[in-house]
Amino acid sequence: MSANYSDLPPRYLRTPDASRFVGLSIRTLEKHRIYGTGPRYSKLGGRVVYRVDELQAWVESGARAHTSDTTAGVVPAAARQSPLIPPTSRGSRR
Image 1 (cartoon, rainbow, N blue to C red):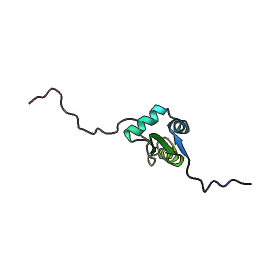
Image 2 (image 1 turned 135 degrees about the horizontal axis):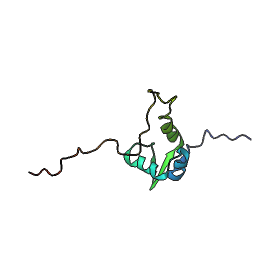
Image 3 (image 1 turned 180 degrees about the vertical axis):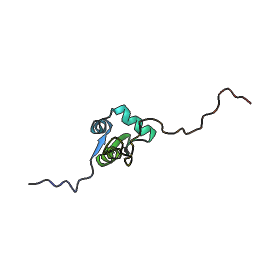
Image 4 (image 1 turned 30 degrees about the vertical axis):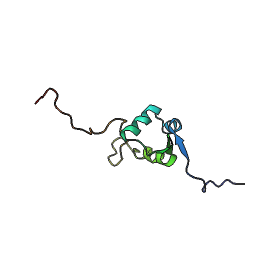
């Protein structure tokens, strides 16, 4: 008897399993979530879950053919990418 999985819903991974799947630490994946630089996720109650195909698409977005491949996308670092509020000069008072 062959198993037919096409009628099953997509598989979801919680953060620890998702981090192992993409090869990053749990904390790095959490930082990506905070900064909006990581894979898409869903919240089910208080739990964060990732679809396997979203994780794969995120990893593939940074795939390169060689080191000088200019057509490849970039998976950014888990850091704030642009400041939300422009810096103000400290020490200037009215």
